[in-house]
Each structure stands twice: as C-alpha cells, then as structure tokens.
Length: 339
Image 1 (cartoon, helix red, strand yellow):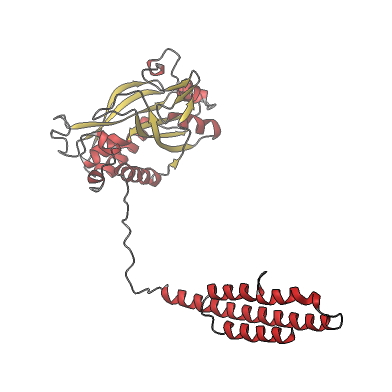
Image 2: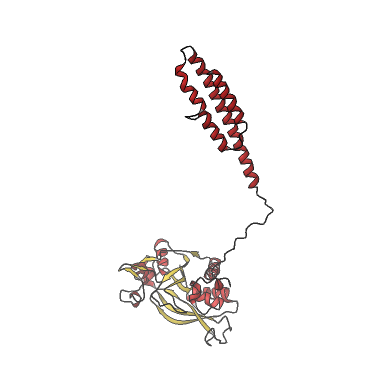
C-alpha cells in the first residue's frame, strides 16, 4: 500500500505540472482527491492492515493528500494570475482613441425663457418661492378675496379634486403662503405650473406655466410697479420696448391693470404678430388688495404692495415668434432643435 501511495503521488504531481486551465485542474483534483478518487480508494482499504501498519500508512496517506492539495492550490493561483493578466491585456484602455459621442440635449424653449425671466428678477433682488400644485380651496380662492359665488370657482373653470382641494389655477397661493410665514419686506417671484379647464387650441392649454411676482413693504406705489415692469420688458424684449397699462379688474388687486408691451416684431407700428395693433398683452398686475393683506396677517394700514402675473408660454411665443402654443408640448425634435 505504501508503494501504491507513492505511485499515486508521483502520477498526480506529473499531471498537475501539465495542467493548463482551471477546468483540467478541477478534473485532476476529483480524479485523485474526490469521493471516488484514487487516493480515497486506497484509504478505504486501510481496514485490512494490521494495527501496527495502519498508523504508518495513515501518516503517509495524509502527507500525500496535503502535498497534492498544496500543489493544486499553488497551480490554481498561478492559473488565476495568468487569466487576470490576459484579461487586463484584452481590456487595456487606450485613452488616445476617440470616445463614443453622446448626443447632448438642450434646454426646452420654455426653460430658456424662464431662466431669462428669473435672471431679470433675481437681478432686482427678488427671491424665488415655490408651493404645491394641488392646493387647498382656501389658498387658491378665499385668501385671495375670491368669494364662494365667483365664476372662477366653477368646475368649468377649475379642476376640483373635492370641495376643499383644487389644482391651483394660478401661482398666487404661493404668495399667500409666503405672506403668512414671513413678515414684510417681501419680494418674491413664484414660477410654476397651473391648471385651468380650457380646451386645447393654438393659444390655450389646460396646463400652462405662470410667473407671479409680489412686493410688500411700506410706501409701495403704482410707480414702483410700473418701473419694475419697464425693466422686465426692456430686459426680455429689447431696450426700445415700451409698456402700456389698461384698467382691469382682479379680485386680489386694486387698482388692477392689463399690461401690454410694444410689439417686438414691428416696434409698435402694427403687423401680423400684433394684429396691427402695435401692442401685445403679456401680463396682469395691480396693487395688492387690502383684504388679501389682512387675510395673511399683514396690517394694510402699515404695509402695501404690488403683484403681477406673467404667462410663460405667451411670453415665449412672443420671444421666439411662435404662433401655436401646442408646439411646446408635442416633443417634436424638429421644433425643439431650433432653440
């Protein structure tokens, strides 16, 4: 049996040194050290040995097993290093090779105009405020001096979730929330999506964007509002742009006005863009109604202010001479690539 063990050891060592891959090495391990391997088969016959021979042969068998296991482990490590080196050679990165060109996106035209408008107002010291698009009826209507019987509360004009929750129809609720939480002076703009029950056509959409502004402080006048709007119009549409205020009515401002700018296409002479009027309406504005200030916990005898609301889509249409609002939302790359 000693001779058999020595013969197995020599045979195994010779075969191990010839192994070239992991699969062959594993097959060799099973051949000699597996449950039905050659070494295991010899050890099963040790029961026939005498009591004196058994420990001696057992020691030799253990030495052979340990030697084979060590050698298999050494060859396994050697093969693993070889595989890793070959893989690294195959996967070497050549930094001089041009990379794959990834198409770059671009800003949506509405985002371009929104960023421009933000920069204008940030430059005048305004902060940006945001609020929920799903709003309480109180903030969307009551706090803004819009009573229960007002037409804007009709389901044909606003999207109601229930009798107390509505999709905001303007970003004015953000102004109310800010006035409730912050004492004057207040100087903010509130950009965001708003929702109204309008049929989709070239100039209307049930989902659109507004930027509303609010200034509350001591001694604010209509002249401050006009000066602010003049700076805004000149910054966005050109230095020669003029503005015009026309009397109007809003529940949350008094006095109120619709604000037009001189046509950016013809300079006020009259053309197709302005329908030969020379002016284009872009926003509504006015002095904050005293009751709105009271609803927000601000004393109208001490403070006053002005507010304005600008339609982003309408401004962008004028900025880029676009005649159909639906183009902004159709995701047609032929259209978007123009900006």
